[in-house]
Length: 91
Image (tube, rainbow, N blue to C red):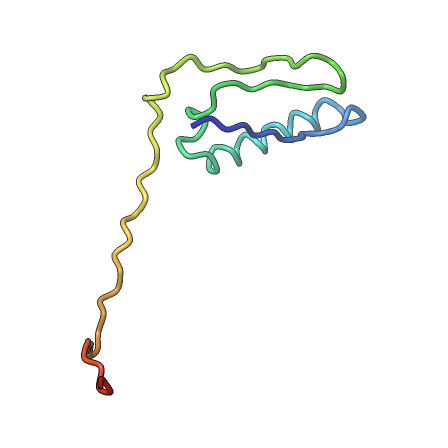
């Protein structure tokens, strides 16, 4: 399954330090948001206005190496009470 995410990190009117700070904050958030963290990210591009995308990150690792977190198994609560399959007003 492939999916694509995009995120705006700033404006061309912002200074470099603000853009770098925004980028770092997003990377920290993605570390906890993506299953498998950044090892699940294949490529990252920087897009500025009408210019061609600039690749800033590429992973050539096998997708099979991504470790996904294990979800806790949901155990349904026990059913307590009386169960009857006999209908009392059958004619």
